[in-house]
Image (cartoon, rainbow, N blue to C red; front, side):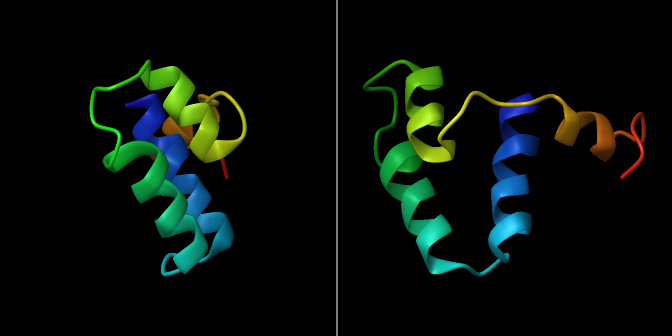
Length: 64
């Protein structure tokens, strides 16, 4: 759930329909399937480890 919320933040930051973000997500996450460590793949996509803030905001536990 943390990965989901943080990944969606990348789209919100760059624009929901940003092609570069979509391409990076597809190439680093979707196309890799279960071939490598999920955290490694996520860091390749996002350039950092996930942060919990996006999930906390989504659940209303942290203000925007």
